[in-house]
Amino acid sequence: MIYQTLQTSLENNTYIITVNRPEKLNALNKTVIEELSAAIDEVYSNNEVKSAIITGAGEKAFVAGADISEFSQLDEHTGEALARKAQKMVFDKIENSPKPIVAAVNGFALGGGCELALACHFIIASDNAKFGQPEVNLGLVPGYGGTQRLVQLVGKNRAMQLIMTGEMIKAKDAQQYGIVNKIVSQKNLLDETKHILNIIHTKAPLAITKVIECINNFDHTQQGYDFEIKKFGECFITEDAKEGAAAFLEKRKPQFKGK
Ligand code: COA
Image (tube, rainbow, N blue to C red; front, side, top):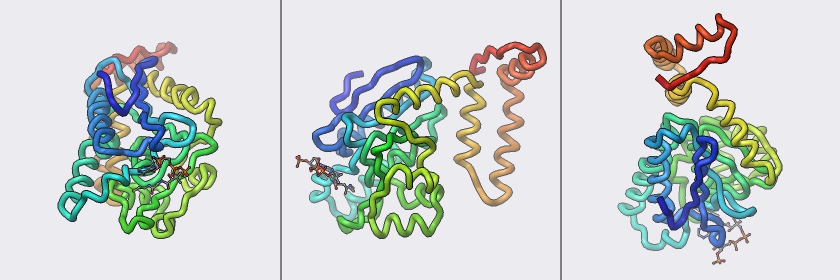
């Protein structure tokens, strides 16, 4: 599929989605949101795709936010509709993807860009990456899930401070806060992210999907534990769980089929 605002490629079963508006620091306009939605659908449906990476074109920005030039047309109802549609079409779909989707953050990840990275299953960042939710500078609150997902990663008080000040933090601080898993040079960012995904590709795909479901259903109450118990049981329906145990006992590498 040819996109206007994205570049895509499939390398070793990893679908690389690059937001490609470097002249506007890859800001998320309506077309980017629609095309990201279609690209995520491709991750779900294409059997060749085992994982995905989301990154930004150029050396300066991952995504510098929602496209501010589209905001002047919004009123209460269209603003709410925009946030609802984007959350459903892109952000929730990334979070709930049955295949791992990793953000390779190569520069500014601000506003909707930070939220895009937060929706991914985890984040690898280059050493020049910067994170922030500067919506309050525009008289806004985050609308693509930032108030919810940031709290889960950094806790309530840090999320309050980051979102209320709109401050930008460096990759190192983002790592210390638990937003970023690993920092690498910009040159090595994609290779390192692909390397991690190649490790995940050797595991049982249905187990990976269940891991995503269990962790996304994290709950302080018994419900989270009950969900995990159910998913653990379901694994024993799969051929891959039989193959995993057999391979261990026969001292060989498992051949997982995703069945
Ligand atoms: N929406 C629309 N356009 C954006 C944008 C956004 N979120 N972020 C950057 N751009 C555009 C700029 O308007 C500029 O376009 P122009 O060359 O046609 O004027 C271009 O991208 C380059 O940005 P510029 O501001 O000149 O780069 P900089 O290096 O001076 O500053 C930032 C970089 C990221 C600090 C600055 O662009 C910025 O603050 N962006 C907005 C971040 C934001 O508030 N995001 C949340 C939106 S809800």
